[in-house]
Image 1: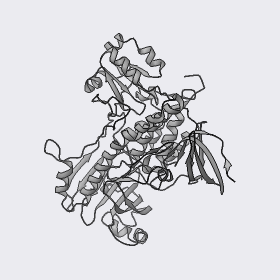
Image 2: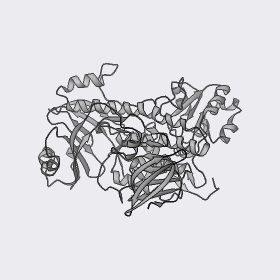
Image 3: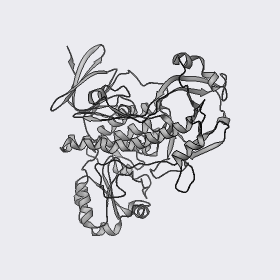
Image 4: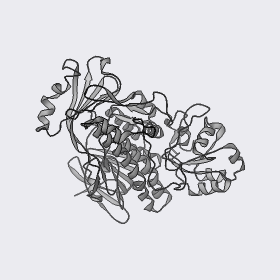
Length: 516
């Protein structure tokens, strides 16, 4: 007979990769009762994802782990595309200085290091339970709760939660309960992925990611942290993929390395896909990360997209569970995220076609022509799809800047996972609604607290800007009346302050209840 686990929970998260771990951390900060179910007994120790960007580091900052993650990561130099003769056809340098998110624009990392950091923090949250070796078998939902049946220690158990979020990867059990339909963007290829540890430094390999654009032998070189290096090599329709991974590694790598130069940490054949599930929600069931969408790796945005999903979804779940909002607002999760992630996947497909093109110059011109007639790769920052932001505001739906505190540190560190409002001094002096905003849980900045306020507001063409917990712009205002309307429309979400406080660096530290 099934054995009942304590509960019910507010949210059950199925899958404990980066997306599931970030989602559980954010839900925990919101004060929700959370359970995470993970099939594996421990962290998968081999490399997988290798890149995240400044926006994702900002989410790590919100959780409280950015400094620890930075210590085990490497700032990415950028990416270069070369033709079969080694000539540069497209350059994508990444700035080496801190960008508008308050962090560097691009990082390389080792996924097991990141997962360990994310999990360590969760283990300190009393409102979050983590069940390792718990294999979800079936999911049912009723009027009030969803029920998860899972196997642990060779016994069958059940638990109940208000919502279940599947962060359980490309073969998602939760997605099977939601939809069997998906949009296919047309990229499906088999590549050999080889991760190595150099035995000594080899500066000749360089610090840039290199995309070798060759119709017969496309390949990618990735410079990881420390002595970690990766090659991704297209294998087309070659048969016997496991034998290929075992026997042909050094033949494929001969132009760069010999067996005496490095040790193989992992070699596996993957099929890169470009698909987006048609539905991300069905009642009390939702999906995020690879369960909702899969991208070719050429943009390095697969894991980033899943973590953005988590940041978009967590505060909306908190609004429904803690603040009594109609859960129809959860439909804005897909309406906002679907167009956003689709833009990244489409760009990754364009890059993949350039790498594979028989005529790289033609592929370059078709995909990357700039208004000035040049051809270059630039970082994209798509707008969210329709949802919880002012549709008539040009700035709304875009990621906000993170400003620096005049006393030192980054602005998100004082806001936490909450809504905030930035108002210029003259408008703030005429506005009588600040107390009501603060009572609602909105962090109202005084311009004197921050560097660069005037420049940022001028860039947006406004005198006040409201920012959601996921750091996307909600709306703008120029007069007290429109500022009042903006505050009325803002969600009253604030991370739990009974256990956590944020420090000037943006990291999170524990504190005694009631001390915030």
